[in-house]
Image (cartoon, one colour):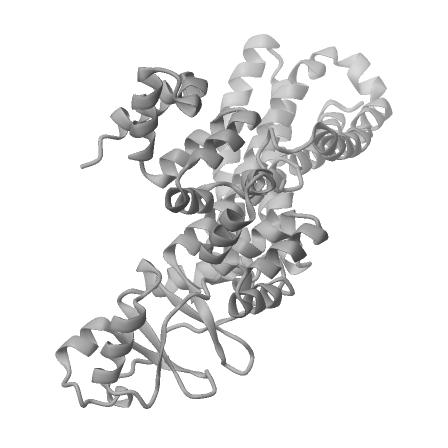
Length: 459
């Protein structure tokens, strides 16, 4: 069992003495360097990500070639692009040829066209053609995520010939080690066989007798979020990717699915906060880019929010006559916004996981209407007690309590409805949460509050 705590302590010690480790200018530095070389490539990559830019390059250049190759694939694309400039041609060529095609494609997209062309020339023809074809696929398509470095078998093979081929070329990825896809001579996907099938059947058995039909076949242009959902739905660890002529192109692995889920979750979090998803980490994204995104969104919401003071100005006589009404603005608006966001997040998550579909919208809306009615009764009682203790007037108490009940009901229905509307318009439902919905409910809440109080209090 790996002692993660001990590994973290070693890496922290190395990080604190990084110059001495790189230069090996002391006994401790030499010991720490040897300790570093014995660590997992993912841990070494994590250390490189943490240290300053100058030492990133020095440390990576010092790594032995085989370790450097493994570490490079663990680094973020941004750090890969930063480091690769200072490497010698031989090391670059070796690293690029060992990288999976999908990861290499992402790296080349970050580099200027001139550099990309230079590095493409270093790659063998077969791999270079894969990269060029991948560069023309949409950024969030299955083709951009798939692993194309996969061994396949021919449909007319026997078990004996299949085993001989596997023993000769090996299986490049662990993910595909138990399931091997079978194609015909035109590279059209036929099905797959398991390693167990090759072991338990006689050598002369033709593959056609033991081929399994895939539970899921993914189109190369399929959106990656749908790919993750479909693989989760069928409980698959591996799925083949094909073009429209069903030519076998590669596979989606468990690592790919994890990457998709992490990326989509990050995108949703950004959208919920009113931000456009950033390509890199927080500190790797320019101040200017973040400033522009946030100022546009906040400025737009500020202008939209200005509707609330306009509504209040139309009810100046009501507020002047019953000044106590102003004491409860934030309570009512805050509660309405929270209730609406709860409904929105439930629907957004349901749409994301596939539990809720467009056809089930009415069921959701009816359920949220029932829920809002029950919550409105509870919140009416709580609000009435609070208002009456502060301002012992039964009419005023009813006005505020009823206003809150209607605000909560409206917020929850709107919170449930807006994600469906955006999904219908092919806009990510995550945009409906947090700042946007809260601002809309501020305006609607003020309008409801003023109207109800004006009607009940007669001003």
